[in-house]
Image 1 (cartoon, rainbow, N blue to C red):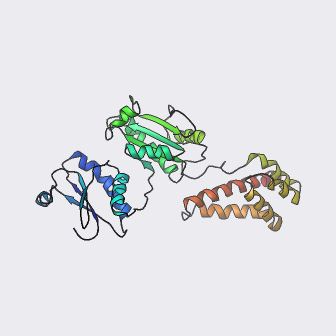
Image 2 (cartoon, rainbow, N blue to C red; image 1 turned 90 degrees about the vertical axis):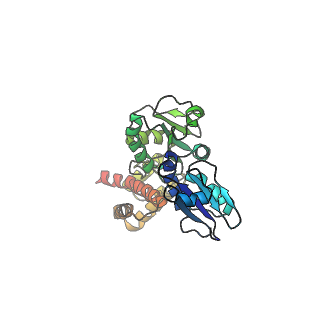
Length: 313
């Protein structure tokens, strides 16, 4: 091998375990793609049997890391996170983080997710479960909805691929659907209707999130009910500075106060114009996840102001 540390996956199309590793190894390659100090490669031992034999590879799948001075053989789990962590430990080169909607981790990574996430919604399943196959598309929809919400992870654990899940989590029937919350001692079993909308509502109720099926915050996010009367009085009884002062006394009302000041300066039309502008940005597809959430909350608050204007007409 050359002077650059190189991770090589030795594989074949004739072994089930080798095929299982295909996707995870591709993910590991994506993590290090274009990053200096490491290379990722693969060698088909079914096609290049003599070369694999020459390199001393007798079993597939097998993963090795070749450096200038040594050869390291990987003996960890099948997930891309495990492979990447192992390569980083030897080379010191860090890969980029991949953002997945539906996670399918090994046992170690799953425990890390449980320890570091406010809420984990998980389905334990196996390839022979017909109900599991029907339910997986809904899990993917839910995962997309929470893809950029750091408080929630959506997980599908294959108990055939990782058999220890059966014993470690006391599984007997599939799909087994659970929600693990930081503030709950025991997992909460989900036994409701298996539609994406119902699952999202269930997660929102227990996790304090406010996601919709499209992944954006719902229309209630950011609204503070206790200040609605101040907004109504400001718009219907005269736009007096006292109402702004009253608003400033309530925690979390910075944007409310800003809107009130803009209305004083620009008139009621500002509310509709600003809401239309932000809705245009939300629909543009150019905003980062953080900005999507921020602007949706602003649109929701502007909607509160707009509702009182409409009622007063």
